[in-house]
Image (cartoon, rainbow, N blue to C red; front, side, top):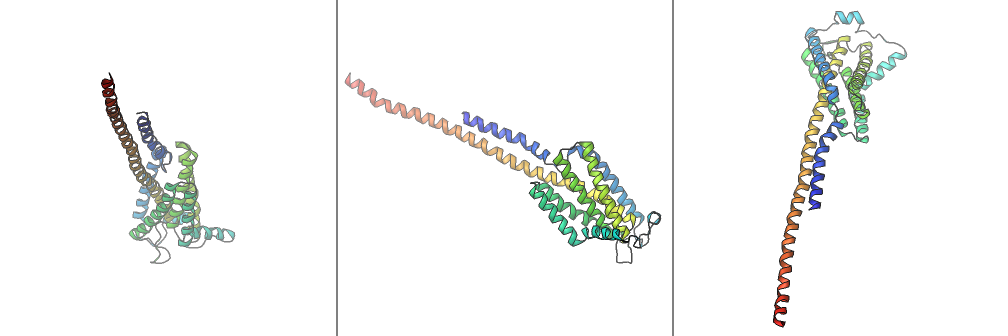
Length: 282
């Protein structure tokens, strides 16, 4: 009886700790959703507005001209090497190296959700910008060079966002500190890659802004989807593991009750010959 109760208590404890574990490993904690949700909505609005404004264009807009002449290489000397290095990180070979390193690092730190986020978030960021480029149709340096939004900027910003989200969860930062870290990382990464792309003449400034905003939309949404999927799978596994001890405890109780009944019956059957022998002697 005591063993069955102990198993039942352990099963109940497993059910109680399941949600707590899921919350502890969440990529997008509830404390950040209140801030990143409106930021993502505003970023989506910017992406749509700029896409409509520059759809089908092949020249820089007024804002682009005010900032810099985007179609001419405006960086020289050692800074050009920095810009080329950043640009390489957004190319297929460079981005593949970064993604593999990020996934491996997450697995070494035992953060499988982070590994899934790095792979899925990077792919979705690049895939979204590629789709938007064909929809908007803005070009630079000729009709075959689609430019809006910048895929390099979106990819690099997404990487920074994912790293900041993982750091926020690992360090246990609160709402204010976590949000500040995530937005600061996105701003720095977007500014760096945007500067490189515009300086090399690969994109207009508004292309970089569109890529940055795309990452602000896609990355938190991907993190939320990974959390939701992982929580659902964890809940199913927890429910199955909780059912097994309950079944075992019920079976043990039945076996012990059967043993008691059998034991009592056997004892009485063994006593009957002894009673008969006593009566005959008497």
